[in-house]
Length: 242
Image (cartoon, rainbow, N blue to C red; front, side, top):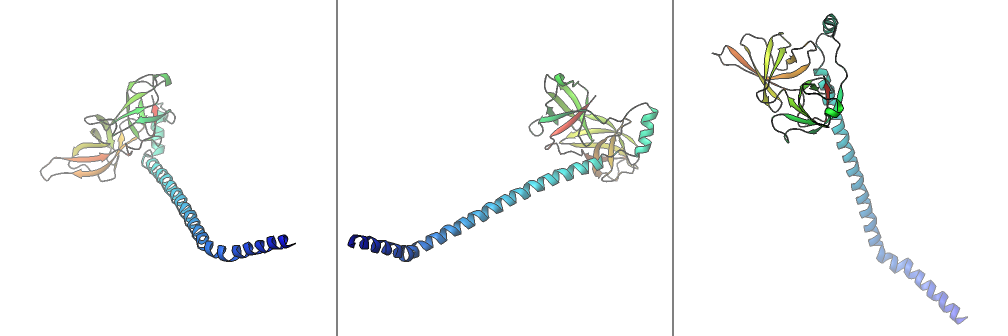
């Protein structure tokens, strides 16, 4: 009986200490642990929310850029253009082979792209290369088994026949590298910043947009500086058409 009473007393004492001294001593540690857990959980949630917002922002910017390209590349006077195509027994080019861009500037010099489609996929030298949104970029210059090299119209010294949309004036678009172009037009030619420069073929595809106009009082010609609609450093996919 005395032994059982001793065990009971010891248990009561331990329970008392657990409820009193031990709990009081451990309480600050528990509070700190709970506080740190709360801070960690809050920081983790903030980081996840921030990452989600960043990803959503990037996605929205890419979508906006794509929509702006589609708007900029809209064909001029669709009904008239369609009538011309029908008269010439030509069809609008809507399909093509989609290829991924493996290497792009600045890793490649002179405005060159390396794409993941080649002779095995039916790609031929001279094929037109465009963005999925419509603007034309260049042509396939060299073809290999599973890859191809694309030379962009903006390559330095490259000359491309084009038309100023506002005046319908035929011009020669000269590449100056980095997605930029220059063209010389008579001084009296009406051209403004934001004007589109289109390809000279019947499809009138977007080549560049006017960014700056330079002319001196004594010049009979003025220099029109323009830029391609695509950011060469971010191109991910292109469409190849014969």
